[in-house]
Every structure is written in structure tokens, then in C-alpha cells.
Length: 350
Image 1 (tube, rainbow, N blue to C red):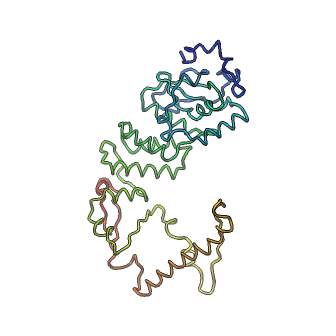
Image 2: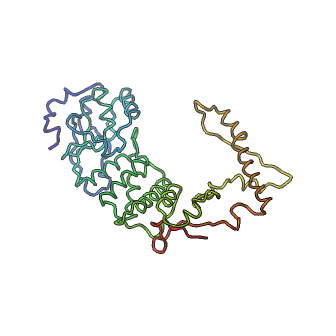
């Protein structure tokens, strides 16, 4: 039995009709969005029915760790004002046992502004808190109009929640969970970055009940975590030495971390030159298109030329480059959980 049946709405739905949500839209047979359980264990799809927002509870921390976005609420409001409610869009999902709005908080806020008392409800039963949370996040990953997709913060919060409650027990489950709730929201590259950061989070926080893969990779964020937790003498002897400079390189991004322009310039014959064809970011209130273009040659390329000149002078004096100095103490970050101290922040000297 649904909440709307308990409220006996079947005999009084006409009282809740509005110009944006007429009585025909209250008939579930007219709703065409394909509802699924997203493949999540512990989710049981029950009946669909029109229901009142006053009969349910909005839980901002269920699917939206940062709550609802006022700009998105206004965007939906303007669309409904112009076009009415679209029966092909997703219903609001309601936990029948608790009355929680699993997803639909933005529509609930919009409805209060436009005076829409009810909505298309899909009732579900959730096996436990983890199934309900996973379902909420997965629903926020739909490729639908006006959907507020999961961002980095939402995904990170969700993984940390799963780790805290022992629902995620290995790295493969982290990867699966990121894919489940971010596959439409974030690029594959960003998803991979988040997996790296979560593995680093496990090591940094001494979480021992989660099995990670033998090898781990690093990026700028995990490098900072690595150094912060490191007990290696390398940190004191080298990284904290104010007399020398240190620079971290993620070799997965070698092409973007070294200036491809230098590589092209090195190919130019001494009696020729290099023409630059460039595009710039879109103009903003602070910088017009012409200003952005002027900065390419007046700022960026000039700064690059100055940096190269300084390196050239260094080489002329020393006959080698700074990274070739005989006193250099290069190192690699530990990456092999079986043979190296990844958790201890071990640096492998070159």
C-alpha cells in the first residue's frame, strides 16, 4: 500500500491539479520514463503513484552531500513554467518504509515555489542504508535533462561513506562504485584519478580492512598525501632542504608536464623559425578576447623564453642542466605494496 493510498488521494486528486501538473499527469499509465533498480542489490521496485510532497521527507545528505543547488532549482522552475511537467522525465523515488525522498529534492523545492503539491512517485524498498545510498547516487548519474549529476565531491563522499561502514572492502569495489555513480557524470580520466585518491586516502588514514591492488599509481594530490605521511629520511634530507628545489612529475602525464613547444622548437633549423598558431579561452567580464590573445605573446611566451634563458645560462656556467647535477638525489615514490613501503611513504633512491 502506497503513502498516497493511505491518504486516500484516489478520490481527491482533482483538488491538487495545477496549471503545471494537471489531473491527467497524475495517472501513472501516462508516465513513460523507464524505471530500473540500476542493478543494485537490495532495491525492490514497488508501485508508482501520484503523491504529495507533504507526505515525504527531504534528506539532503542522502544523495546530495552538498544539498540542493538553488540555481538548478530555478532552472527547473523556469522550464516547468514554460513547458509544464514532462511525463517522460524520471519520477521522484521514495523509500516506502521511511518516506525519505531518495532523489527528487530539487523538484520538491521547485514545487514549493510554483505551488505544485505533488509529483510522480516511484516507491521502493531498500534492504539497508548502503543499498539506499548507492541507489540515490546511481539515480543522480542518469543522462536526463536538468539532471544534477554527481561531481567529484559527491563521489568522494560516497566512497568514504562506504569505507567507513565497511561496505567497500577492496580496490576493485572502489573502481566498481566509482563507475556506478560517475560513469555519466565524470570522464574516465577523472574516475581513474578518484580511484588513485581513494587508495591514497586508505593508506594515509591507516585503513587496514580494505585490500588494495599490489601496485599503486600517484598524481599531484596523492603525492602530497604520500609526503605528509612519509617517515622516510628523504623528506628531511632532500624535500625540506631550502637550498635546493624539488619538482614532482607524474610520468603518466609526461607530455603535458613538459612543454611540447620546447620539443617543436628543438626541431627548428638554425636558419629558420617557428610560427605559433594559438587559440585562447573564451572571453570573460575581466578579460576580452583581444586581451587574452595579447597575453599569449606578451606574457606566456615571454615567460617561457625567460625561463629557457635562465636554464641556458645555468648550462653555460656548469656544462650540465640542473637535473644533471652530480649532487642530485632523485627518487621514485614507492608503488609496490608487496615489496615497498607505500603506506610508510618510502622513497626509492635512483
